[in-house]
Structures are given as structure tokens and as C-alpha cells.
Image 1 (cartoon, helix red, strand yellow):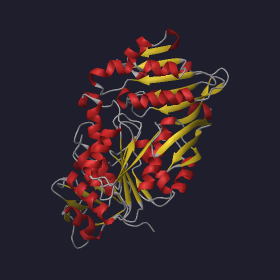
Image 2 (tube, rainbow, N blue to C red):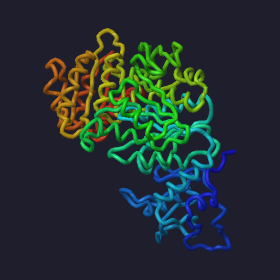
Image 3 (cartoon, rainbow, N blue to C red):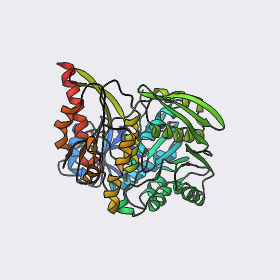
Image 4 (tube, one colour):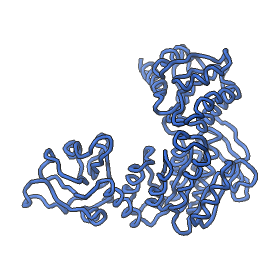
Length: 480
């Protein structure tokens, strides 16, 4: 039997809200009797039994109250009752619904006695969250968001969904501006906090990478007593991060990376089929193990996850064994076989967002991909956004990584990618277009048997349209 996540009384006590209904006959309806199995802010994904939280964001969630109850909401957290709200529908009325969601999050945290891990970084946040789901899942019940819910509403939403008896909670925390991480880590109060890396991302809002490091270090301000800081040893801002963690009261530190001196050190990486074989020094002992996700950068993310698992007392051996069972998430390195003429090609879908660090990692992944005879490496790249005045140079600088990865053809979209296009060797140029949509047909025509094609770009570049087109063609041809 599924345990109720919230009862009416618990939710009211957490938020200080009023239990009521709009209209209806009190003789046939008792507000206090409802219970909920989940929390939702979107009627499109709401499941029967969820509390619907009517947030005011791009749209006012109160406009969707009728749809929420039609979809099976058990109750709604509201600041007012719209006229089209169903009569008798259970409502929990608060002054501000976002604050009400935060209040639910705090209550969920306080009634749970498991361990919490928070993750931030310029790249690899979501991948590390998913790796942690697998690593910690070998030791107990893990709660983590299915999507990249890492902002001012995503973090409290994920925390409000934390089951009372979960052994572990994993929370991804992102930011675009200084000061955004501090209130979110204060909500989570993690027992271990990871910074995956610090790199040029959102430079438009920060100016320098050091300023980004300062913002990422905010995650340590929320550490629970005895909390552990998990730090990227190879990063040039390691010393700054450690200093800020010390100032925030971190009880101890664990480092990860490839350089000598890291507590969790990657010694060797070998691609193996759709995964990899890894050798690492972990707590002074050399370990060799399989990983289900390819990519040297992912191998480092795995070490960060193992370090956090160690920090929260999970079974390290079980966690290492679990790495072999991992699979890449959609848009983050997931591989699939697609039809190409009379043969087959490989699609590497890295289309979920991009900055210089993650772009370089994806290009490296393409370079490491094994090629069959006659196959080519093809990169489909959308522009990287929010990089400020350095954007042209950062785009042009990708040329070196593409040459080093022995990429055969590059298809590029967006005005900023013009700077890369002009730096590419002529033989490497496939096609440049102002928008990703303009690349779709050309890429479909270009991909041939045994090719490996990788798609990467910021979400706003819409380069994911290319990955979708290739995947859809695969579905159509496989059913023809």
C-alpha cells in the first residue's frame, strides 16, 4: 500500500494555511479528510492524488484550478479561490503559494531522518544527480527529481515530495545569478554538498569565472552540522571553494579528480562498448570497475558521487557495483542506433543545454567513440548562450577540441557559432545555418553508414530538433 505523502492536517500545519472549499454542502464534504500522494505545479504532469500548487510564474496557476481537479488533484494549495473552481473542491489557502511550497519543503525535510546530498556546478549537475540515484540506491530508498528541477521552485518542489521514510534525498541546485543558491541550500540542509566543476557559464551575469566559483560556493552555507564538502580537485578554483566551505563550517572535505592528491582519483579510462572500464584510487586503494555511462567527464562525476556516498555512510562497494547498471539520461549522452542509408549510424544525444565545459566534454565523448570502417565523426552544434563579451572567443576556441577529437564534419547553427565556423578547417565544414531548423535536412542527408553523430547546444539554440528528427526517422524506418 502506498504511504500518503501529506494529509490535510499535516499540510495545514506545515503551511499555516486554512482548510476550506469554495461553495459546496458542508454536510456532504469534510475538508479535513483528504490526503495526497504527491505534489504538482503543472496540470499537464499532475497525477491523480497530487496536491496542486497554484504558483504565479509565467502564468497564474490559479487559472488552471479546474483542470487540476479534472486531472484528479486531491487538493489545491491556493492564495485565492477562482470563480471557476469546482464547488466542494478541497483547498488549502495561504498568503503566498510559493512560500507555502517552501513551508511544505521544510516540513518534509524535518520529518525525514535520511541523509541529503546537494549538487551544483557549471556542468554535470543533472548527470551527477542521476549517478547518485544509482549509487545510493544500492544502499536504500532514494528520492530525487525525475527532471532538472534546480531553481527557486524546483528545489522546494523536490523537497516537498520527499517521502518520510526515504533513506536518501538528492537535490540539484542551479543558478544564473549570485545569491540564488543560498536560500535553496538553506532549504535542503545537505549532509554532503558537491561542486562538480567551475567553468565559464552564465558569464553574462558574472563577468569572471572566479565570481562563478563564489556563487557555486554558496552551496556550503546550508550544510547540516557535521556536513561534508565534496570538491573538484583538478579545478583552478579548488582552494577558493575549500576556503569558503571551511568558512561555512564544513566538518570535513573529500576531493575528486584526475590529479595526484585527490582522495577519489581517476587513474585510467577506457571506452568499452556503450560504457567504460575505469581504474581509480579510492580511499588509498586501487579499484577497477565497469561503468554503464561513457565519457571521461562522467567518470569524474562518478567519483564525486562515490565521495558523497562515502560522506553519508552508504555502502561504497555496492555503489561501485551499481555504476555498471547506469544508463545515460535523454539529452545527456544517451546513445541510439539510427538508420543511415542501407546501414546504421550512432546518435549521441547531448542536446540538453551547453556551456564551454560541457561542450568540450561532449566533443571529447565524440572523439572517443569507436568507429567502424568507413565511419565518420559528425558534430552538430548549437550556440552557447549567456557567455557575455567572451562568447565569440569561447565559440571560436572549440575548433581546437574538434580537431583534437578528429571530427570529420561540423554542422553549426546560430550567430555565435559563426565564430567557430570561421575557424574550422575547410575540410571539416559541413553546413552553417542561422537556426538549428536549417540544419535538420542537411544532417539527415549527410549521416551515412557507420557514422557517429553528436548533437549539442544550449536549450535556446533549439539544436535538439536535429536529435529529434534523427530519432523520429529511426522510428519511422524501423516500422516501415
